[in-house]
Figure (cartoon, rainbow, N blue to C red):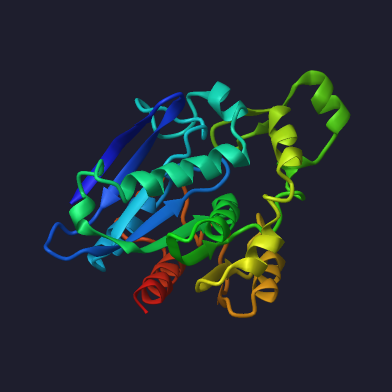
Length: 280
């Protein structure tokens, strides 16, 4: 079964749009939750093909849009709601991931009988990798962690650096989205939220505390998040496993839109390794 654009409504919070990919049968399946990255969304590129691969492996695969990623219920692809994007921050993304896990493992989820709630894995790509690491450190419900091209520090990202005085004075700064040509706004609240929660958002500390199995996948030639960040994560948790992809990029050779019927070979390697790790 493929269920697209389901909506998790929340009191006093923006809704979360999510997809479920699973084989509808009598088996309770491991739950796999995918977290997209910065300027990302659940329908980006080849993510649907990725979801179908997990479904074929008899896993219950969920991907969702972070509530303030710039998408809407009506238009979950790209960034029609830049006001929401401007108000996003790491705290909101952690809350979103918490709410999606809580919902999926509750009686409110109509597919609950298909899920083994004691077998939850979280996959995070890029910035979503950092969020997944922080959440895994805080949440005992997560039994396995897989990070794809993950960041190893939030403090060094462009979102939390730059001309702070000018940003504070203007209240907003803009990052150009090269694909959509939109000027993506970041309100100064993003920096304030980061500083107020700097210890909580320390990825190094979180990785060192994680006791569940952690698979780190990264392309050696990633120009967006350097391979050194994967080495950092692996060094901080010697029990983690580092799987390197040669001759590839930050999105394992996918792009948006992805019009091929098959995913790129390197992305397929990522999927096969991830599924084997989850099923171990």
